[in-house]
Length: 251
Image 1 (cartoon, helix red, strand yellow):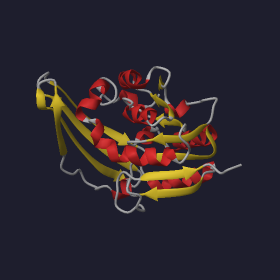
Image 2 (cartoon, helix red, strand yellow):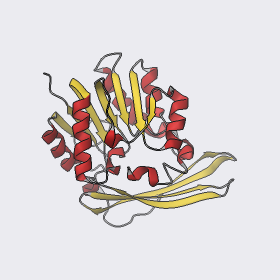
Image 3 (cartoon, one colour):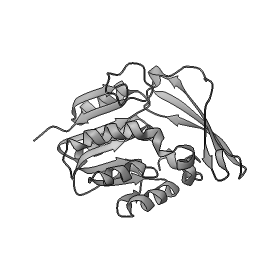
Image 4 (cartoon, rainbow, N blue to C red):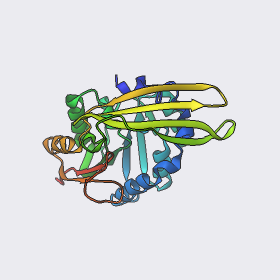
């Protein structure tokens, strides 16, 4: 089972995710991915691995695409199903996905693939993605990149969002640092002031090295592998959250 589902951020408190991380936090990343998907046609068949609460799926559906999402956290997939329907948001582990019809585009955002247990599991996932894509199809990954992260625990970033009691009722503090060149740590503190709910936990992000992931993609058969610093499309330089783009060759 994926380690992701055991974390409270995605599990027990998964239905609060949209409260502390509103949709606008990802709008530029989402628009970048949608712009890539548009190149595959107005009815692009798209798969979102680690789709969470379905915010990106909802945008893809509004574009006229044919999107599907997969996530192993029941609380989050329940919200996704409210957005796009039970037939499009599916409960399951991305490490074991298997669809009969191929996809034009497969995406995995917000470091979802870094919850694979080890390099071997990630390699198997990337091979599954290769097999699931149509010839010429595109894989779009947003990954953690430890080499650009601080090597000691930094100060927390703090987001205060609208909650049940109004403005600044939800507080999420978070920080990221590198344990080594392929492992990143992510610490989260969640608090809802009005309900007196809170938790703190640290996530271990495996295979957190974009260069290493690119090597696995080439080994899986992908071509035209690109590493981008962020959604603006610049080459990888200083980001801890780069994009990786890769194509399945045309037959």
